[in-house]
Length: 394
Ligand SMILES: NC(=O)c1ccc[n+]([C@@H]2O[C@H](COP(=O)([O-])OP(=O)(O)OC[C@H]3O[C@@H](n4cnc5c(N)ncnc54)[C@H](O)[C@@H]3O)[C@@H](O)[C@H]2O)c1
Image 1 (cartoon, rainbow, N blue to C red):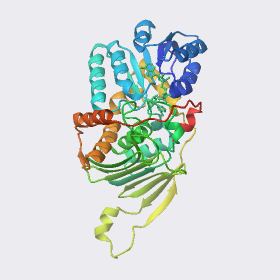
Image 2: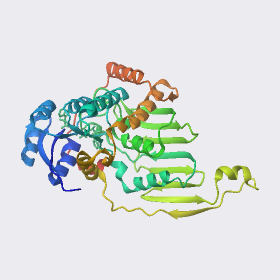
Image 3: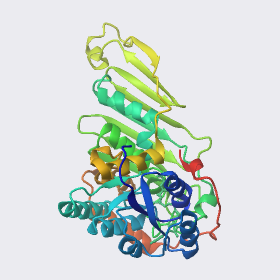
């Protein structure tokens, strides 16, 4: 990062991600001055403010108005992301927001609209998202290969990601977790925003989505803990996504098939099967009934030492404030894409119909409200558990 003045920053939310991930980042970050931390739980705000030698706030508007901050990190449960971000934008305050950007697309649209409006007044206003999985070396390599075009026309992407195992204790560790009112969804809203974002980052948005979601199939929760989705793209490519929080050991395997070859990403390895000729041409020119295209297999080298994860996304956010939004790992305006996939899968599952994009945001929001209203779910007693946050990442 270039030598620049320190950015005055604040942090809202001092729970698992706030205290576990951001506080250590902020302690180490040379390029910022932490002017305040905020949590509605006074004790948390006081403890972390004292440890950082900064001021404690108990309401986010007090932090936004009283601390003199230029940038804020939002690390509270998802439903509150839009209101906090919008309040920050209106004050010309840069935002780094945790995933998911919002719970439903209508809220994401409201955030994006507020950001665009504020940017007309504050042209350098930065809106970043914590999609740290985009920076993981294997994901970067997949992106590089897909964008490089050597696979030719893509025909299929299949991602099985069942490495999101969560015990009942996890769901019992916060009263907002895995409820329609507190979180607005299950695995798609909490764990898989990364997967949904990566899917659209790699392959673009599908035009049709069919989803199957099981509600509380393995856990005592009222939201989905198992999902299968089918994506159809305008160019004919199809995609599959399978996820659950109930399998252990889990699988994380992605196959990307193009006319010129197949990429398989699994167990920290990317294998490339390279076709000697286009399989789409070969279908019509093959002199045999059953023969396959000749292909070679190679392991793709990946630089696993490249900087990545939360600290890298955070540093790029600070760099973007100094030098422009092209430095962002994930622009806030892009958050709606993965969210649309997640909402559409659930909408399809609820209505038992294929959803055509753009998603009817009002219909989905209405469905969510109905679920909140109709909820008879009684949560197990909340259990407080201290655990290393890094073990939560797939
Ligand atoms: N990027 C990632 O991989 C990643 C990992 C974990 C969590 N997250 C995201 O971070 C967010 C928080 O998750 P968590 O696991 O830290 O939750 P958590 O329940 O552990 O912590 C949330 C904290 O926010 C505080 N809070 C809640 N509402 C508030 C309000 N209105 N004002 C001030 N403080 C408030 C709570 O008191 C609590 O301390 C979620 O959106 C989650 O999806 C992202």
